[in-house]
Structure formats: C-alpha cells, structure tokens
Length: 521
Image (cartoon, rainbow, N blue to C red; front, side, top):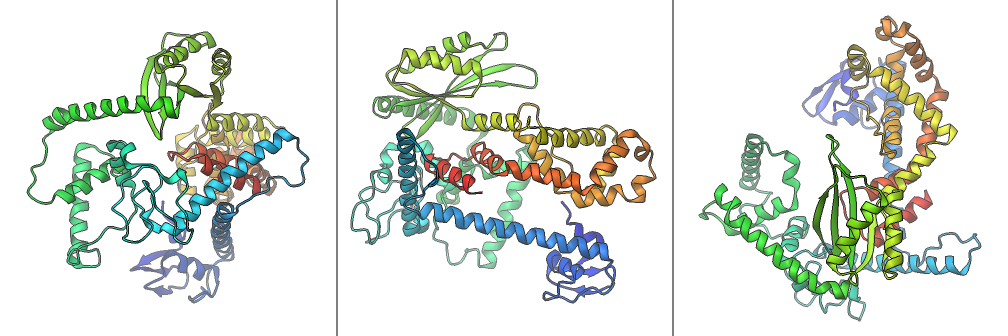
C-alpha cells in the first residue's frame, strides 16, 4: 500500500521533494516528509506553503502513530510485568466463595509456572528454544541447555536443578518434530569469516540464492509465503550442511522412495506414541468443516505427550449432524484409542456437540469436555453484537458498505479515494463484524475528504437516497464517535480472539497471561 504522504510530493533518493515549497531532502523518507508538512520542526524544515487541512491531517496522522507505538510499548511492559510477577491478584475487591478461591489458586499456579519459564528463558538467552526443537549443543561449564531438551541442567545462580517442566528428553521427541523445530530455531549459528553477511561475497551469495529460489517458486506456482514454512527452512539448512557435490533428488524419488520412507517413519512414531498414551493420556479434538461446494467433513485429531496427529476424516456430506450421529462417530474414535486413554474431548460450542459430549462424559466420568476457546469467544461476540448500540452501528456500516460495493464505478471511486479495500464481514464469524468496523474507521479521514469533494458530490450517486444516507452518516462526527466506541468496547475480547484463533500453538501459560492482559485493558 502506497503511503498517502506521496500524494503531496515525490520520492528523491531516500528522501522527498515537496510539491508545495519544492523543499528537497535526500534522506529521512516518508516520516521526515510528514513532519515537514505537519510543521513539527523535528530535524526538518517546516513547509511554509502547506494548506491548513493537509497540515492538520498529518499532525493527527503522526499523533496516531505515536499513540499506537506507545500503546504497543505499554502492552509489552504489561506482558513482561505479568510474566515476572510471582502473584497476580485478579479481583482483590470481589468477595468469592471457596470454589472461586480454588480456581484462582490454579490460575496463580499457572502464572507462576509461566514466570519461571520466562525467568529461565531470560537467563538462558537465545540458546533456549521451548517446545521440542533440536539445539546446537551446550555451553561448556554453563547451563547445559540444548534446544528445549534441558536434561539435568541448572539455572545459573539458582543452585538447584531445573523444574521437571523443562526436563524433556530429546529421545522422546520424534525426528520429524525435531526437523520442524530446527527451522524455527533462532539460536545463533557460527558464520564463516569469508562468507558472513558482513562481507561482499556473503551479500552477493544471499542475493543469488534469493533470486534462484524466487524463480523456482514463481515457475512452479509455489506461493512465496510457503518459503517461511519450517520444513522448507530445515531442508535448506540440511542442504547447506551437506555442501557442494551432492546429487539433487529427482521428482520420482521424492514422490517414490522418500515418500515411502517418510510414511514408514511416521507410522513408527505413531506406534511409539501409542505406547505413551497410557502414561500421558489423550486429548481428542473434533471439528466439522463445510467447503464452498457444501461438502461437509468431520476431522479428528489426537494430542498426547506434546505431539498432535491427524487421525481420520469422516465424509458427512449426506448426513444430518445431530447429536446422535456425532455421538456415534466420536464414541467410535474413543473406543479405537481406548476409552481409558482419552481424558479430554475438545469440540466447538454447538448444541449438537455439547449434548453428544455430555452423554459421552456421563458414560465415562474420567473424561472432560472442553469447548473450543476461539468458538466460544466468537459466540460471545455474536451476543454482544445484538446489543442495541452495537447492532445499530454494525447495521449502519454494513448498509453503507453494501451500497459502496453494489456499483463497479462507485466501488472504483471509493478504492481510489481510500487507497484500499474494506475488510468484509463473514456471516458465521462474528468477530469479523468488528474487524470490518475497524477497517472502515482507519479510513475515516479519507472517507470524509472524499464524500465532501466535488468528485463525489457531482456524481449521480450523491443524489440517490443511499448516497444522501452515506453522506449524512460518514460526514457526521457523532457517527464516527459511535463507531469508535463500539470498536473500543470489544477491543480486548477481539484481540483475545485473534490470539486464540492464530496459527501459533500457545500453551496454558500463554493463554492465561493473555487473559490477564485482556482483563487489565
């Protein structure tokens, strides 16, 4: 996306040329140009000819950027403080019963565990990688940290062994998982002195490598973001390790013998993993999915001992997914795993899943049913969206958005005016309603400037009933203030949803810390 500041000048080397006063600077970039137009007098000469409305716009723009940076800094300090605090009083003024005290005690224990992990990570530095990764050895006479398998090591200055939560043996981590974490590892690697990134040869080599992989990805249709996959990084690192002269595997070999070897490796891992289920217990996860062609499947995944596997997929395209059908399918998987091994079932919060799991947990009292965190928050946002103030604001914004996208020419005008598309809402993911409102509020100034401009007011769209409604609404500060109030009202819960629904795999300590941060906002 092009920075709006370049509408008022042009780039010159690493700096700018102002179109109002023709001030020329060869450095500073967009930030210095904004300060020049805002007349901030920060390491740059003020523009004497800037129009008042442009000056006001960039003053507000810089203030918003500064406020966002301060908010991020405060949030980081809050997270660090929560991680370091040995005890966090959640609601000191509330009177609670004994059951609530028990729940808070568990929460405090989880927070203390997260604090211990945080403290150890600070001491171990970049040589510690939580999870199950493969490290690059341990420091002689130091803490003995090797990836995340820190066996028998000591925290410097603590005088005692590490807690058992850190004593996961590398032998218990499947090779495939170690390869995965190898690509995620951020531990420093020793560079050759003649090819390091500080040398001309090193910089040139990286450029050549990047161009070669870019050509390969673009030629065979591999999206660039796939290069960030940890398995891809692990393959590159293994290639670098083997050096020059090794014959590149052919496509027949990759889809043939190497595929068979990987399948055998995974089957061997699963057999070893099944033997550990009696000791660790199993969490069964079940989720329904409906595709664009209305084909429906039910996926089953199992988690135990720090590793998750996809177990099976059930074709439910011609089935009614009531509680009886789901109970039959879930029970069959439970019996296959061994009902004595399954200790927890995780599903979405639908009434059909809830009733099926209630019957199952009554039959097997040692099992617990846990609704999906992201789905639960999504349903909470659905109910919040029915509050009169929220519902009126959401419906008004959606009405205007539908009108803007109903005509190709109007849509093109809007996109040119605000410089981007709006984030559309999803009918079943109610958190996207607030994502849509936020995307519209971010373009408040551009919308107002466009709607009062002659380019819009001289068009036929302005004279229609919806055009007048959009003009009256989006040129009213009260309408925008209501929009901002609704966004701020759900911001902590929405951010928690983004955290829970992300591609990352947070542990209970991460979730608890994020929950505490949400309550403090």
